[in-house]
Length: 116
Image (cartoon, rainbow, N blue to C red; front, side):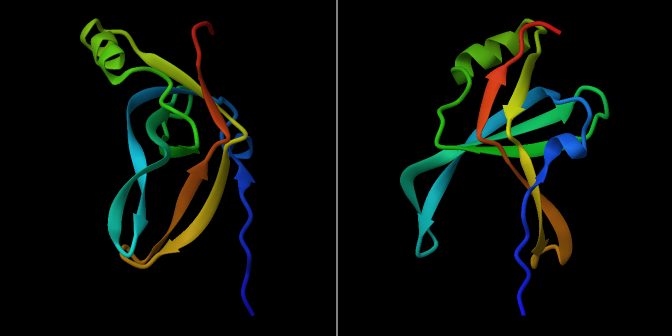
């Protein structure tokens, strides 16, 4: 008998849903263990501004929130990029490589937060 895990809304884990972005990268599709040129979405490396928990959030089917050069310029100027994710869910899974339960976080959208 197998168990189907469903996503838990991130808002049940974090009361504050704004995050500071450290970096992001594209996630590519793999076929027969070989990377293709197909981009599946972006993975954002973020920290919650209240709890300081760090997460990697996957946002499929959308381009990055901004150009990487613009982001790097912001960082050089001492500015921070704040993000908010739409409909983010956490799904636990067993990672055989690390032999531990880990979280996969996926969101339907992402937006830049300019004001608090």
